[in-house]
Length: 504
Image 1 (cartoon, rainbow, N blue to C red):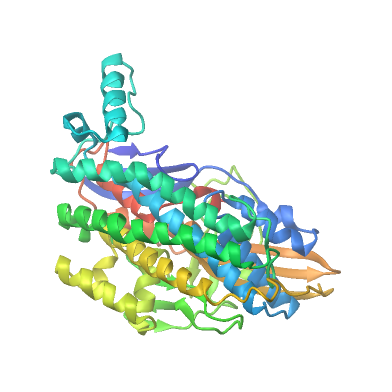
Image 2: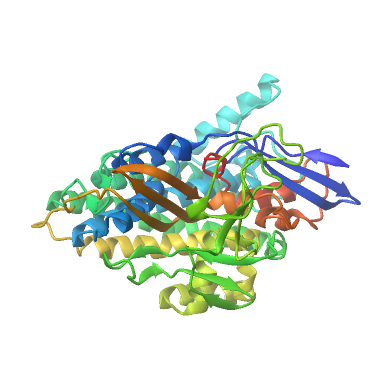
């Protein structure tokens, strides 16, 4: 039985997932990116300082990660070291964006996979927001519309949280989270200039100097976000995990894990980071090799450019009529192996290195509560919980990091663009490992390449026929209702795909 899940809703961009179901088991799955964009072509021949602005337009959800990766790549190419304030401002802007994205993903994009929204119809309290939602859903259901009360209803068939109080609490937090997300975005915009698409991020720092009143405003906003994360977001994650223990065993990808590391403690390129970089294969972590190990296969992608090229030599020749292809997403591989990137990878790579003691403590704490091993973070629930762990650590870090700013010093350094040069810039977008590569000729961009998180996770089969992380997580899943597959949708949402980034 062939079932297309697309267009998959509650994610960024245009994704279809084609499945073949046999005896209620997903026998095969294909992740289909359904558009082409070509940012790397757009950047050729442009002023290098256009790059951190243009690449932000790859995505309106995680633009700052692209600006930061581009800035890092340019710093590498210019032989430039950011100022003390500059690197901190990069961290403050990007970190606040992570907090916004984690809350958006759980509440607006994924919570409705688990929370029984109809519980609000039984609500008899006086909370004005819940009363309004109850009245609105009641009226929508009575209207006879084919799709009433979107995005809350209709919903897929399946099990949901069986606790009215927990469901109503989650809905209240769903509504509150939108205001909290605004506060995180305002915090980013204090130094970045605006959200989305910051104007203040540059190689070497930020054009906004860290005045004391701006620092205080930033801290006030992040404190509110932090309180919500600790008091509401993480408890809601635990509620879902306890209600769906079987999802520690569902949605496991069948490869390794990779993280580029996030939030450096100093401007130096080899600085220790809040989350450590590394590649985790067969229980062993090794350093990331940017020069040769990362390649992209295109046998099943709609490009006629050669397969298996490394980042420095990457090419982009779109071929929409290619017979063997089923997606516009390339297939990145690390030394020929499929890896998952994202929050679970970020946490597991750091945990196995013992880089961050607080992260280890949190992983061990939640593992004990759920009676699991840390390796079970490779699952639907594991990815959600990993985002909560990242959010808590980042919120605490940002408050401490903001105290290290020096208001008497500028936020950026002078930039001298050389005639030639090349550089790699790596960071972690909320969805995972992000790489930008730039090469200069005659003071202009000769080549620009991006390898982004969802390109890794939603990759098609590589030239050897090995599926990508999400495809392997779907294959073998038992589904109760083949034509709806709430189980498969939960797996897809746990990766938080961003198709605009994947088909950049």
